[in-house]
Image 1 (cartoon, rainbow, N blue to C red):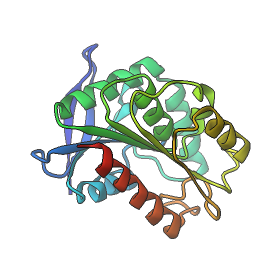
Image 2 (cartoon, rainbow, N blue to C red):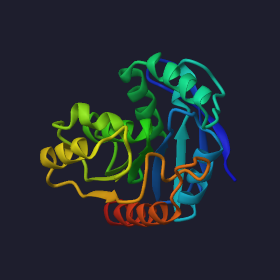
Image 3 (tube, rainbow, N blue to C red):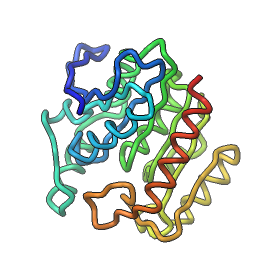
Length: 221
């Protein structure tokens, strides 16, 4: 079990982050939330990744719009999450991501994100130089900046059944970024890595997490 800590962005904004693992660990990860906040699932992900020897921080990026957000995986939760996401500027999100990375410096740090966080992890790779590796899980917004140049190695994961991220988009991303390993899980839908969703796919989640951890083990040295 981890704990909530407070961080401060460059503009003075104070926000919460869930911290898991040993603060003295030589390697670190930033785990970026879905549109449901730093809820039970995201804390569980952070705890699990920390068990592989990382100090993990999961920043509450919704704090700029509303604090202590923990939404359920319901239609109401989706609606609220989309409203909160729309209320926060990309530049402000990145300020909070940079502040989180700064808290983990100078140890080698990676970033991994899920859903909206998958897109933010892509921003972490392309708009920041604070990370040595980035992993994205079903990041729907990646398509919009698929031509961006990453500043670190990137790995991507998508579900073949994800109607929100059609395979045509994934193929376009692959064509724009031929050096990036892109994994597609044939029987997996959006959110296949979340055991609180009906779309959870234990087999795909296990394989994607193994690949993610192997990627970080290779690059966070």
